[in-house]
Image (cartoon, rainbow over all chains, first blue to last red; front, top):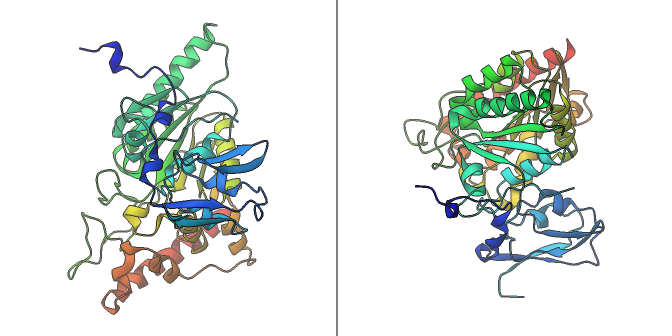
Length: 87
Length: 304
């Protein structure tokens, strides 16, 4: 028997699930080197690059899984991966 | 641009699927309805009680993705004719290679032949990754999977993958293309053409899988690039009967760039690691011969 609780009516509720807890390595941005090309945003599988007004503003650590794609794709090496908890 | 697929989905770290989906969905500002075949992309974006989708989204079985989206499109056409709906809506189906090359092929063929206006996107990671890396019709010759494991008797998959994009093009549909997420400009341009095609369109997109291909997830985009630069995944489009090379594939064909050796592709992935042993040299030669033959065939087609 189906009840109202069985139905997902709200969109985008996966945001409530914080995949950031999966991470073992953490991307850290050096904004001095960043040129706001937004390649990191284009290639992030987890919508975890914060962009405001066309500028890269940082990383959404609540959801970043630490895959390292942003770091590998950054043309200016502005993103480094560090061991989680070793900053 | 609105976010259509949110964070918080449960796809593996470094998975290419959400990157591909993001790029595809960036190609239109019209409302979209998505049908999603069973597979990693479906289960990981819809784990109850949550959904990572901000657009109307329908989960459907492996075999019925194209049938589902064609039904939705037919209902839309009918409602529009009756004046009950005025919006201009686009319809897109996502399926993996298992759902597209194998199980859902007849539904896809039927929907294209009937001429529904929809875009089918194949997230091609070259095996059934969701159930644990079983071979599919898209798996490369020589790749080790759990149903064709490399060992002392067999060198991984014995057969060559089917050329699905050409099978689809044989339907003489308005638009079909192969793309790769590393060249996002090319991919988005192709998705835009697919969305605006007046009839069915098809995108076959290489979607590297760190678990199934056995490489570090940080290299996902590099891996897609390598597939194109070695010629294993040529970028081209078939538009109203005309074949055109694009991106790096075009530059290689024009002699402006070198095609990278096949060995670079094989060495980069654990699924091909066994092929580096001298006993499987004939398999590597066979892969090379197939690669060269497909490359020549594509050049012939694009020169027609």
